[in-house]
Amino acid sequence: RDPEGAERADAVEALAQDLGMEFRFAHATPGVETYGNALLVGRGVRICGSSSVHLDGGSVVRTPAGLQKRIVRGCVAAELALDIDGRVGEERFAVLATHLDHLSEAERLLQARCILDHAPELSRGLPHLLVGDLNAMKRGDYTDAEWAALQQRNERHGWAPLEDSAAVAALEAAG
Image (tube, rainbow, N blue to C red):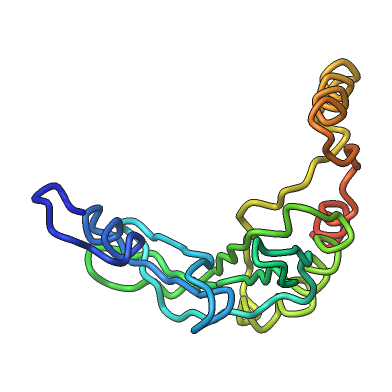
């Protein structure tokens, strides 16, 4: 609901409208799921085009009804240009946004490789930046004490042990 109490079904569209921003949204599985990835672009930047791709893989979980379901993920991309006094600049760049698997490093690696395979078409060959929730940890970002504390937390909760993310390493290696 908006501040006046009116029902607004699309939260991303409502947020963009309230903030005076452009947005692009891509459903993970159109017609099936209501989740996906969004890019919101503020004043001074224009969206000149967009595309998306569904990523390979995704963890398989069991629903409360006992059915198996694959958690599908995607990547949305936008070609952007600076807006200078109402004129769209000539120089372009792209931003890609994703949300990788939250359960399995093997699935994250498969999805990262899929993004790398599709990056040239998603970015339209432009310089680009990948943003999002990678659901991955890089060992080098933590001290020994921090990593040990996180390992203990995972053990207490019965979660999978921490891994130095091969998905992040693959993305970093590609630049």
